[in-house]
Length: 302
Image (cartoon, rainbow, N blue to C red; front, top):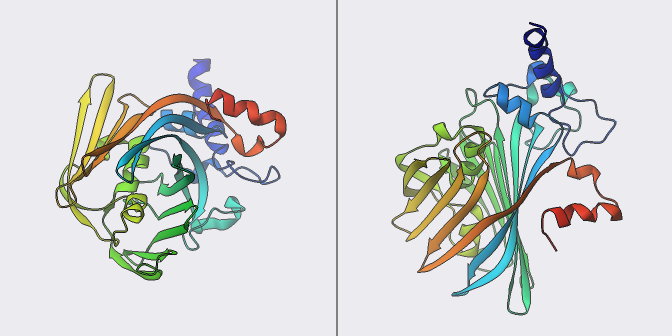
């Protein structure tokens, strides 16, 4: 009886710690009542003031060859401004503008001959999926020795407003609007929030921002075939674009918290593969001293 009476209080305590990720230590944690969660286990895992960091062995297809490297997926809950679409400095003071999100920072690093690639995609998906059915914001950037590019999509006025910047003359600076539809990048956070809500069947999907940039392809929704295949302890979600000759399969744990175990991306006869190396939970934003480099060793990173 004592345990049952303490459980609601304990759940609220866990939830009250959410959104502290990447905040100044002086910033007070957000109030529990403003942090909706898909279920009690979600709050107990994600609202503890820690992020989930997972490293992957990467075999990246580029320039007609396969290049070894590594990838890191950083999942964390934060307070987000619905109007400004940036992380809030003071969530409790934002009132109705405050939207709790699950954020993914997805990084890849690999070498192509003499020069390196550093890629990063960020996905900002509201936790409350009754109010929000798509990510509020998506960004992607690539840095390599030829230059760098950046793309950003913001959900505003019932559409995705986008901006793109590139060192290529044919791309240059661009901006425009896309109909609000499914975005491939949003499927990664949807898996962690609730894979049962992943769309299936034929839908229009905005391909991954990073793939579009690497292929120098203009942003546009493409017809896609979406499928979810549970198989015991693991499940696979596949996004297939017949018109692009490209497919992405994400393998994840069927049981909560639905860890990403790896993925395969095939295009033009070459397949990019990633396999889980290590996974830890950590308040990494506070671990910036020289002694904290040991955390990279725990992830198996150079």
